Length: 170
Image (cartoon, rainbow, N blue to C red; front, side, top):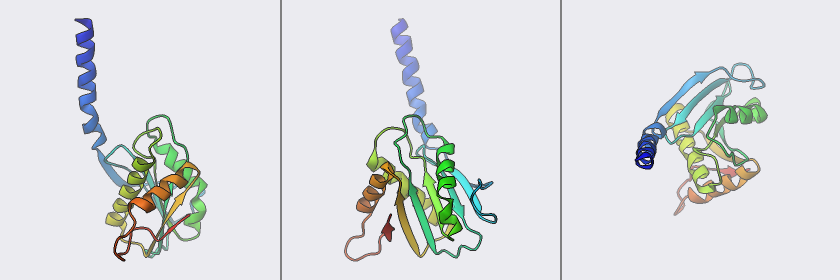
């Protein structure tokens, strides 16, 4: 009886996970962290699969270049918004150079290059829906994120001469 009750409680808890993961929030305005340049607009949110994100758009951005950041790691715990904020602080130089920047936490911790590439592409699509299509989009991978960026470039490569979502890989 005790085991059956524990099993039922665990099953009920697991049944709530898809509903929790389906939550889409934002992008909502946020205060840009230093050293993001003054006048930039920053946003945070959740992508609907469990990944959290930060977006930064420079003051005079005219839909020029978007840098999609794939972070190092992988992390071992659940996603935390602070992870992407740390990345934005570290790579604020891109915003200072006039480029928009977007970075995801990925939906869960652990090793999952394809999953992380999907999360990066989902954030790119969200960015385009909310802020418009940039002229160029670059994938930027940091350490483990380089594998994520390479996988995203592979997964979303254009076919038959069509324009793909990414114009370069760093």
